[in-house]
Image (cartoon, rainbow, N blue to C red; front, side, top):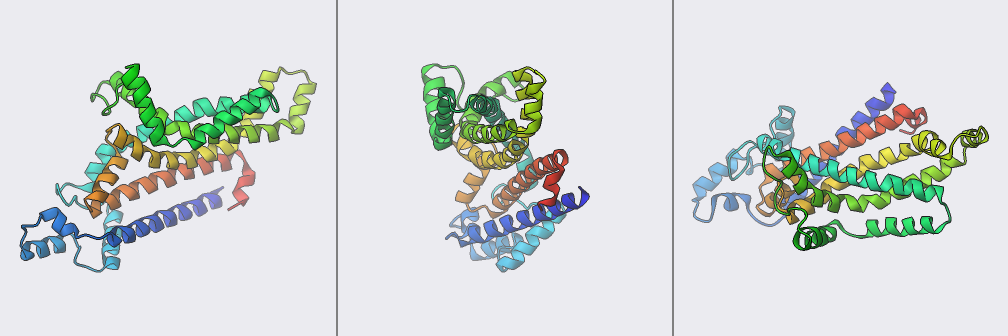
Length: 314
């Protein structure tokens, strides 16, 4: 288990480095001058040169990248080009909104997808199985931004059940929860089908095992066999999928935060890319990638702990 853990940590660090390096190169490939955007057209060449030197924008790209990673190792993600605030402080303020939205979205997906998958597996070949298959594929095919628009039209404008704009009043948990319902549902609905199909496939495989046949031979109730014995084993691949799904939900939150005007990391990345605010974009993407890698690592370690066979696959 220790060797598996060390290998996964090394792979996680490599993934973060490659992701940030790729983003760094792509950002600098976008046409435009970040110094002119930050200071405006009236700034003198001397002021522009001083600002570029302060932000290390006058150095070669590789040197800028080394400076960025060197600062990261010291806990410094840079300084916002426009407000001169610490990028770390900005991200700490916005990160809880994105994590809350992603976790709530994953909760929606698991709450709906896992029971659908179990129901489909236990009714294999029936009209229930075919219906749940159509529902699963349908949720996968619908893009989250389209679900967001229809959710706003139906539940906010016509039925007036939930608010649309913002994240709710600070300190009011009930109001924040009401503001979270629509965006989390819109983001999480797309993963219902993935979880349902994974649970169904795993359940069908487990239901054919000998210990399930033995449990039935001993006369145990079918509900107990399904939820206590079969689902405990069948849920292992789903845990891995949920870890990967959390990363997908992080990218899906960008649309939700823009459409529902919510604060969060995704909204910051979108705004700062338009403004070519390199330090904030680099820091935000690095935090997002690191968060995704950590969640995936935790899910892999959970599966490896529960199923020792997985430890030999890396």
